Length: 154
Length: 118
Image 1 (cartoon, rainbow over the protein chains, first blue to last red):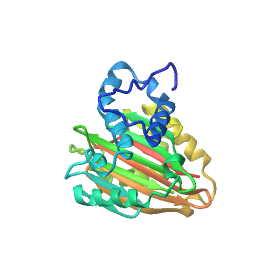
Image 2: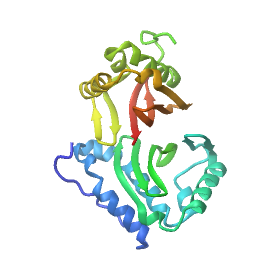
Image 3: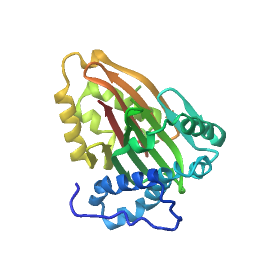
Image 4: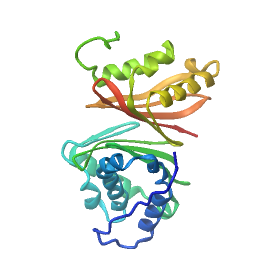
């Protein structure tokens, strides 16, 4: 694990708004991309769709609710420690609540502690202290969208 | 739940999930039987792929268990959604909170993510 180097080679097909929070999340992505290095070329190609969706998901928070929702479909589900959100309306409500609850300083404190992509699964461990001590997301990606996402904050 | 490894149909997500939980009481062979050579265990510390690496991980886990762990083990939440099983659990004071997400394919755990909270 972690042998060799691999760069994220972020495609610039989206005009990146150089917001601070976006810069934060992408630099964190670059730092934690090392677990991908063990993958062969074939496996890497197979996981690109998942990685692209994860990157879009992370970048979308700076752009707002509509951008976040582009990764979900009517059959998407988010499972959390105490609830489940099914379909566009419920998922939109979940992220609307999240964005509205974000306190000043949250994005500056946001830090990705672990990240991995394996096949159709993306995994993330992050924190935003003191607001969120530790949290983890697992995204199951199908057809370029998030089919199921589990989210746990501790 | 009975062991349906021998049956012709692939086990459901719920069956695999239930077996995974029961297997801890049965030992390392039962645990590893839910995985294949293509399975991955995605952890904060990195990704383990294949039976040898997964066996070693659970071997270490079972060896590290302190007396009282299973008495303290409590599932806070579990839910199955299609081929995904989600669980939040604790075993205080050993593990304050932990979460597993299992992606099941062909009756085996294809990918599992696991995070323990400090």
